[in-house]
Structures are given as C-alpha cells and as structure tokens.
Amino acid sequence: MHHRAPAPSRRTLLTVTAAAAAAAVTGVTSPVAHAETNDRGLRRIIDRMSLEEKVGQLFVTRVHGHSATDPDQADVDANLAAFGVRTAAELVARYHVGGIIYFSWAHNTRDPQQIAALSNGIQQAALAQPTPVPVLISTDQEHGIVCRVGEPATLLPGAMALGAGGSHADARRAAQIAGEELAALGIRQNYAPVADVNVNPANPVIGVRSFGSDPRAVAGLVAAQVQGYQRAGVAATSKHFPGHGDTAVDSHYGLPTITHTREQWAELDAPPFRAAIAAGIDSIMTAHLVVPALDPSEDPATLSHPILTGILREQLGYDGVVVTDALGMEGVRTKYGDERVPVLALKAGVDQLLDPPRLDVAWNAVLKAVRDGELTEARLDVSVLRILRLKAKLGLFRRAYTSRAAVERIVGRKAHLAEADRIAEATTTLLLNEGGFLPLSPASHGSVLVVGADPASPSGTTGPPTTTLATALRELGFTATALSTGTAPTAARIDETVAAAAGQDVVLVGTYNVTATSSQRTLVARLVATGVPVVTVAIRNPYDVARLDGQRAVLAAYSWTDVELRAAVRVLAGRARPRGRLPVPVQSAEDPTKVLYPVGYGLTYGH
Image (cartoon, rainbow, N blue to C red; front, side, top):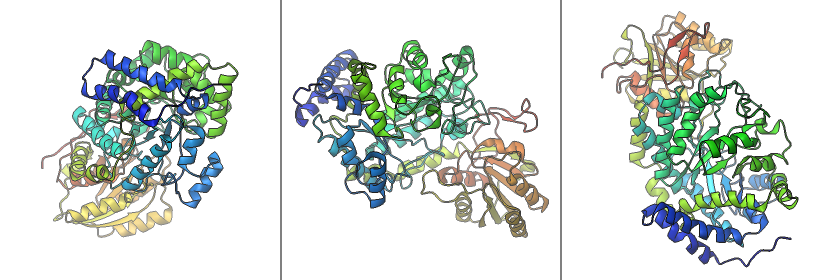
C-alpha cells in the first residue's frame, strides 16, 4: 500500500513555488538558481502526492459543459456516460487530472465570460484537493481552419496564410495576441503552432494548418510563434513530432506511414522542431504515425521509445513536456488496446496523456502498471515534475484564476482586431489576373453574384463564406448577392446558379479543395461559359487553381474565417494590394512533376 505524508495546506503549496515563479519572470536570480529552488519546492509537492494523484497529473481530458459545477442536463448525461461523474469539478475530484482540454462541441466555449468562469471553477475544484495543484487548461486554437474559441475573441490568419505573408514579426504578433486572449480566459496551454512541413498536396489532415513546404521557412515562423505565445504567458505546443507533413492518411481515422529516410527526415521534418526547441518551446505533441527509418518496430511515434526518447530527448536535447496527440484517434489504437496505449506512451517518454477514449480504463491501466512493477513510481515522478515545472513557469501556483475584468480588457479588443485585419491583408495571394481584370470597382463591376462552398465554420461563430464575402462587398459599395452551392453542387443547383448569373457584372466563386471529380469544376466551367467574368477565391488549399480554367482572376485566402475573407475582398476591390506569396508549390493536376506556380509566386498591383 502506498503511504502518503500529511498534505500541506493550500497556502503552503502556493508559497513554496511563488518565489521561484516570480524569479523566473523577473529574472532576479540566475536560471540555474531559480530552477533549483523551483525544483526543490515542486519535489516537496510530489512527495506529498498519493500514487493516484501522480497518475492523475499525467492526464489531460475533455469534459462536457459550460460550467464546472452546473452544466446543462445533456452535458451531465454525457459526463456520466464518459466518466461516471456529473461535472468538471467531480471529474477533477475523482481522477485528480492535471489538465483539461476545451472543445466547442463539448460546450466549453460559448462566450468569453463563460469560458473564464469555467476555468475558475475547474481551478477551484483542483485547489480543493488533498494535494492542491492547479490544472493546466488547454485547447486547439491554431487559428485559420482550427479554432475552438470564436468571436468575439480575435480570430487571426492561420499558419499557411502567415506562411504566405512571410513575416516573422506578424507571426509573432499574431501568436502574442492569441496568447493574451487565451490567458485571459484561463487557457494556458495552446496546441499550436503546427511544425509539420506540408510537402504532400494530398495531405488530408495538415494542409493549410502548416506554414508551408520549405523547412527553413516553416522553422522561422514556428520559432516566431513560440516566442509570441510564450511572451503572453501561454505554453506553446509544436506538433506533430516527428512530422506529419508527408502523408495521404489522416491519423484520426488510420495509421499513416512516413517513408522518409533518416536523412530526409533530418532535412525536411526536423528543422521546425529544432527551431521550436531552440526558441524554448514549453511542450511538443507527438504524432500517431509510423516512421520505419526512425523505428523499425513500426510502432506509432507516440509509443516509440527510439523516437521520443532516442531522438527527441537525447538527440535533440529536449527536456520539456511531451504530450500525446488525442488517444482516441485511430492512428494510435490500431496496434494496441486502449489499456496498453497510455502505459506504452509513458514508457516511450511521454509526460501528458491527452484525451483517452475511456479515462477510467487509461487511468487504471497506468495505476496497475505501477503496482505491477511495469512502470516505477520514480518514472511517474519524472513526468509529474516536468508538468509541475510548466505550471510554475506559467505562474499558476501564484495565480490560478482569471477575472471578468481581464476578459473585458483583453479579449476581442479593438487594437487586436485591427492587427488581425492588417496581418490578414499581407497574406492574400493573387495567382491569376488576366488582362489586369482586378481590382474591381463598384462603378464598373457593381453587381456581383457570390457563390460557392459554405463549409462549417471552424469556430462555430463566423458566417458562411458566401455571406461573409457578399456582406464585405456590400460594405464597399457593391451590389452583392450570396448563393450557397456547397462543396459538391448538384446539377440542379448548378443550373440555378447559371440562371442567377445572367445580368451580373462578375461572379465570385469560393472554391474548397477541388478534386479531379469535383462538381465544383462543372460549376466554374458552366459559369465561365455564360460570358460573365468569373473570379475564384480558394478558401482552403491553394491547389484549386490547378484544376480550374477560364477564370479572369484567382485569389488564395487559405481559410474561410471572416478575417481572411474580408481581407480578400479588400484586395479584390483594390482597398489593399495583394502581397502574399505562395508558401507551397502548385503542381499541374495532370502532371505532378510540372510546377505551375512555384513557392514565392504571387502577383500584385498598385492601389
């Protein structure tokens, strides 16, 4: 039986690390001195933890509901089904979890004040435990197509858009704005920036979430974003190690294999992670994929000791927090059962176990592995210390709570929104402008029909792309009508759209990942045949331009969030000049060896 020393008071624990955390911020003591002081205090906390509390610190889990103590009944039912508890507070009490991840679909992110109150409720529950340790609250706020917190928070251009802008200063500033707003909401770990180098246009899961295809360019932007987030007091997380950029399989639904040689990995995949480590990255997320050149066992990287310990820890010298990608993804579940995955991940070198499909199964599996001797308690202590170091660095032991005033002062402030618009304008990329057709003017192109794909909003709060584009055009003096045709327009919808194009000055089409068999190609061809000038805006991957013909102009926006679409409209109307440059090559659809638009390509025009 594990014997636990008497638990200290909450005040004692807060005092233990307060001086060291303050020193880390102010730089009063030397790095070595404050690290030693900090570790001594943190080890005293670990010594007072029960085995169950140590196991809990390793887990980061989802929870349903907008409130830590009073969620809606549907969320109570969801928590009972998933965890056997009713609320986030009960979840913390039962499993002593070290982290909580927020999702919009779990109803965690309705509005800023609600998010802050949820964060404070979770911290209150954590600090009421026998060994009070604050929770590290996290989310996926990459911006662009992956956002969990929507308006009125500031939404910023995503990674590939920033890659098109090419400015380290803008990337850093975007991350700092995002970090300041997350911190005000009580979210202190962000699973961004993506450090994958997107060298495969068919990549179904990364794509515009990557800064681009050039490892050195990606490395510079990753480092800039790490600096921005961490200046704002939020732990950045580069992902997905050892690199998810060259795969045609989505690890949410299968187990990808990366065929790069070790030399290719070092040249293509490693540079952004090296740059993140050099920038002082707080955490690195693993990938659920196989890299035979790095581990012949063909275990997923998340479960690979040669990859996580041999390469990440020993070769690259990283001693920060390693967090798994979500353990409910199929990529990590194809080879081993859910009860083995968390144990094998810890043996590989992981610290945080993210969102297992069954928390009780995973938690008890780790507990059993220690009691059976497969894992030692000393091994757990190593990871718990890394996690507590991060919490101390973030100041959570000094101040776990946020405030309504902080939310009102910081989240969605006018200066942040203006910066987002400025940064977005520098990312919009003009790929085609036949005969200098752009910019448009209300005098000569006053009537615009806006059609195209309306994918679900990444944040759940922004408008459909066709509506956003039409509204932005109307605000600039155009007469604009929105007609959604979807990502797979039917023959009847295409006929309706062609009829609606009659008498228009321009048709603006928002395209979304056009494939060889996509009916979006038919839509554009039919519209071109009407004789009305057609302009397309690729609202996700810029590769669409290779599969479409006859347009007068083509823009790449890299996302369908409002900030990027409004910027694209300002470029269309000549209110801003296009300055973005392709961060990935666009190859011929018929002959992939032929590059139609190289990295760095982008047209421009004067105001």
